[in-house]
Length: 358
Image: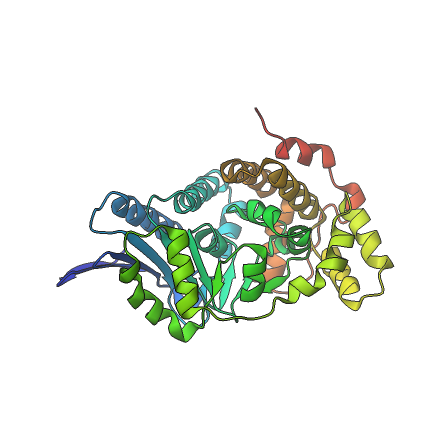
């Protein structure tokens, strides 16, 4: 990996092939630098991010961290799906599970970091990008940002602590999003609790320049001050849809959710049912139970541990390789799920994976 380090007055800049870390006064600035892939995360990137956070944890010269993504297309498209496909089709399950463990530890580190971590989200933020962005103490998004946890489309289930975040969303919006795989806007992210405020993307540099003025303040006070100076407003489309979403997605099982959607005259409800039916049946059952278990526990570390168990289970099923093939590799959008029907899903096996082993 290419590595460059330089000092410029009070600035210390370290650049690896895909991570740039800059110390400027009291700020530690981290930039994901893989824009051609919308900053999709690789193993080396995760290890480098972990090292940077570990080094700055006890550095008295750094009082606040900022994480952002390079390029106009987005903050982070999540993990590199082609790496995932390579692992599950060539016997690399154990190594990839270790990589997921590293990623989940990084997400937990961000959530519990002793110094304020501020994330700036623009464009696309999916999967592992949400893990980096939405567990931080101060979470800023542009109104035009697009978030998603579309794992059920590829035979997987939401991870990186997303089940914990979805469980905390108002009503049953979390179930709706994990079962349909729908995208949601920056305004929705604030409504759901994935972001704290909206700031126009052309003001991100102003936000960074203002941060030293907030040095030594607690994160809630920093967030409140930033929103006063830079906050913008946009309406959340999901907020207005919550009544019919709650009525359908509060049902006990995926089949009953589909029955309620089919009985509704709302066109959006019928469209949601169609998207669910296109997704992996086993993933639908995993995602629904994982979100509801996370709601009951309301504990990020246990959600991450549960998600890792689910990942291990799904990685050894043919659906995951088939889903990635259909959606990412061949792009024929016609996965052959096994089983193909919800009624045939092994619910007992999934329930055992979801259950706390303690």
